[in-house]
Length: 222
Image 1 (cartoon, rainbow, N blue to C red):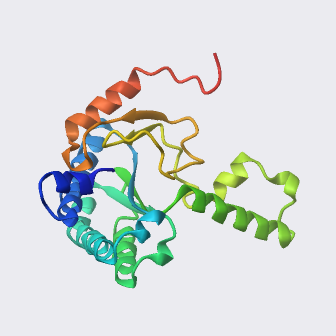
Image 2: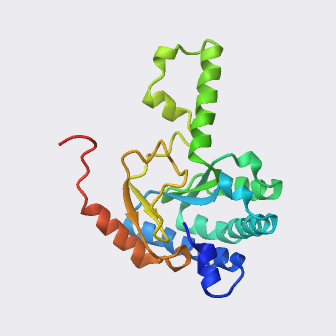
């Protein structure tokens, strides 16, 4: 979900206003996914690199996340949306972790759709953390190195129950993965949208899915 800051800059607004507008696009995107019958939606909400931003902006982002969780939890429950989170969540402020854990608990039994927030997340960090867990298991004698395969590696990622994404949408016209789900997007279809994230709406989501349905996915086969 890229382009919040640039969206604000074009309008002479503080960057936090771009993030606030972007939060509304999240709501529209979730609604559109439910209309289309999408069962899993992962949003790259805060990257591991985002901690390097000015402290005031990071604090504003955390406060916005707190507000989103507090205000939207009843709506998530009403819509039957289950919330999950992936990333180095221990790096989040304590109050934010409490809000997050509360929403995850309250929506745990929802059956309509799963919304995954990638928070304090980095694809390389996820792979490194998985390697550490596997190395620890091997060191303790729980597994032999020969047992390590793609399936076992996937089981040691942050969300082993989360299916690999079929479609990856990147807004603001950027042509890179930016450390997002590096293991999981090996065979994902990419759709690049030139709009900044705050301008991304239901129509854009429907158009991206329509483009996806026109693709022929071969997974290395003919």
